Amino acid sequence: MIYTNCYIENDPELKDIVVEDGKFKEIIPHKEYSSEIETVDLKEKLVIPPFVESHIHLDATHTAEKFLFLHSSSGSLFDGISNWAKIKAELTEESIYQNALTAVKQEVSHGVQYIRTHVDTDSVNNKAIKALLKLKEDLKEFVTIQLIAFPQDGIKSHAGAEEKMKEACKLGVDGIGAIPHYEYSHEYAVSSLDFATSLAAENGLLVDVHCDETDDPSSVGLETLAVKAIEYSLFDRVTASHTTAMHSYSDAYMGRRMHSFIDSRINFVANPLVNVSLQGKFDTFPKRRGITRVKELLKNGLNVSFGHDDIQDPWYPIGDGNLLEVLSMGLHLTHMLSHEEVMNAYKLITYNGAKTLHISDNYGIKEGNPANFIVLDADNFYNVMINKSVVLYSVRNGKILAKTKPADIKVNL
Image 1 (cartoon, rainbow, N blue to C red):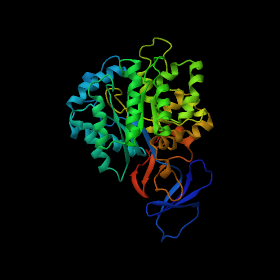
Image 2: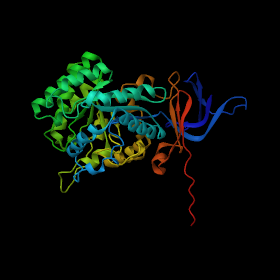
Image 3: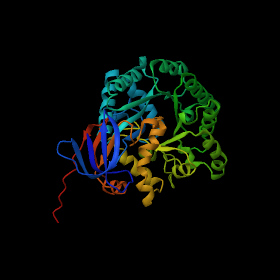
Image 4: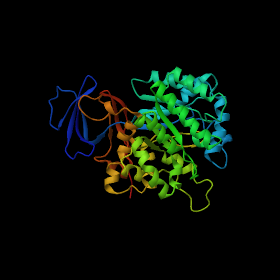
């Protein structure tokens, strides 16, 4: 199979993609082919690697409509956690599976082929973990799913949480999480991070922590997480998600701590759509933007990717799995709107996400890699963002996984 006549990332020359046995065999200059050769003409559209969902909670997706009566008027993070406790008690393993499947289908239709989901370890009989492990296995040919064991109510502040985290390891999760800003005290927060990182190191797992998801500048779990990443030699196997307190840290504090972040090589995930909605709830004016210091982290060579966090759940009642919406919000909030920044913005939901998931070795459009890519309805990524372009094709192992026809819009002026 040859996918012809396309622009690959920022290369201005038209190329053809030769696929054999589900892998990229060759990337060559565009040419004409005889009718005997099977080709797909991409009509001078843009080809990039598949989108990577760096952060979502699939076990909570698509519960908003059924449980709207639980939505608090404040819309705060902590009210969402309280509502989730009521909601998850009503869910079954089958309903979790079906809700998550709906969300995955939405994301795949928008070009996502890799997903990292956090999964609540506090569900009865591990129903959430079991449901998502089954989903991961059932869909493995179509989408790669990672599971992070997530102690929603804390590790040290919640009786039995440590044992549940250990059970999650035995069940087969891919990583360990924590939520230090939700622990009862700073001492508990530090202890919870030590437990999570040591458990991950013992079991050869990844780490992804809901870290300092608050406007409170005194929430400094991040400094401990970076140290633990070094201490246990985990380094870039560790991810700090959210880190919204960073927008309230002083520049002096950031200057003092940045070297440890750099030395630790940890990843950062921002969730622009959800955190701009959740943060600033205790502010009158000015209201904080609810996003970490993306530009500053990138400037210092640290890896940052964007994720959804939530789709139609107690924290975020809308959303349809389109990472381009997440990216657009993130670029606005971080003032990353120069031509160069927009042209390269796709890396925040592709290559940077692959680094976060620790899958970079087999990711990207290069010979020998699995032939996974998407085709966008534009000739470059700047025009993708201007025109809100759709994903025309999502190709997995050389075969078309999803296909979309652009809207046929006619304006009678």
